[in-house]
Length: 322
Ligand SMILES: Nc1ncnc2c1ncn2[C@@H]1O[C@H](COP(=O)(O)OP(=O)(O)O)[C@@H](O)[C@H]1O
Ligand SMILES: [Mg+2]
Image (spheres, rainbow, N blue to C red):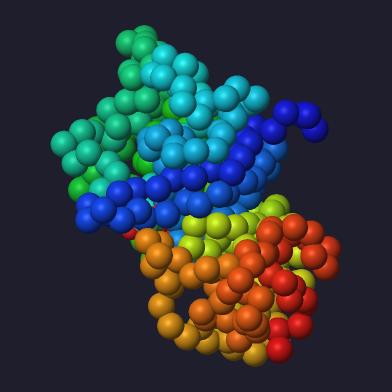
């Protein structure tokens, strides 16, 4: 095991102006590390800040504060030239394979684009490299000449993955890579991603909006709620011994088709909407939807510290769900 994590994120903050003078606190103090070849699942409801976190980590967005270290190098505010090296080492697969592939480019050009941007595309060998990448993701060399609309959604996501692999990265950020896919296709893409991780030794930051999606793929899981991480631990910790009420609620809503995951847990229905990231509740941001909430939860912010075996940001962290 290498001493230096591939990725270290410290107290990362990304705020947006909402256009009316207020601040959207999309990511509000997130820390985690990712070791070489490790897979970390990041799970939370839509709007909790997952994509903003992903895009900030890979520096498609400028961080408001905090630190991002890639292989030990601080890239938090790195300028273009310094970022080039990091961009070779980490790449991103987006949720929507329709929106993320240029409809006017052939698959081969799309896959070769990162190589061209980095000045690494060679006329000789370029085609072979494209064919190799297509093969890696389960497509045929002939697919290189087709346009995105000539592929199925699953195939399109395979092209997005091939593009992400073009520069031999160490880290893939997968932003809900299967959420837009049919259930049957979903399983195929997950199997592909699992295989790539073992064969190439990639590290994954695997983002999903439900806990079922990352169960198979992740060594560790962090649960995100309204811009912050509320619980993190090993797969066993999160699925068998969740201590944060929000994690327990997410777990209880995993579809019944996956009884192994849900066990005998009773269904917890979250009442109310995810509160606004512009004006989050004081103290614990989950308290307005929490059945355990006490006056203390409004007055103090529970830190993400070890409670009952692994980090949890709840004063009442315990395994039992009721
Ligand atoms: N460019 C932006 N400008 C203003 N607000 C944004 C922007 N991007 C995202 N947000 C807001 O930040 C919050 C988190 O969004 P996002 O990161 O897309 O969440 P998720 O990926 O978990 O669904 C939401 O409230 C969203 O409306
Ligand atoms: Mg998103």
